[in-house]
Length: 119
Image 1 (cartoon, rainbow, N blue to C red):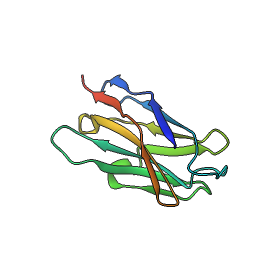
Image 2 (tube, helix red, strand yellow):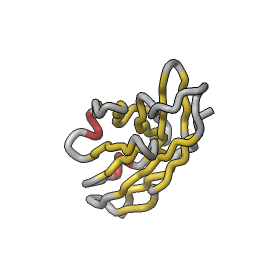
Image 3 (cartoon, one colour):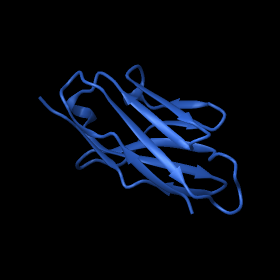
């Protein structure tokens, strides 16, 4: 099984930046190749979980509207780690950010890391 561990959340003022990391360990089945898709979702209080950004193991990237122009996703396939650089944060970005990995019908979620934007 694949386990995901996120880090990098915290409290930041509006306009500030944070860098989230998510490291995957373990495997699904016998595969040793890097995980096909890794991405970030977030869930704000009282709202549904939403996709923020995702990236495949060959570098194809998808950003949803909240991330465009402010967030940057990247990954290190050798480390099976995905990063999310959050810039120009605003109060509406306050949420728990979850890492997700998907490959060959398998899905894993991290435990989430809290990002709070407040003055």
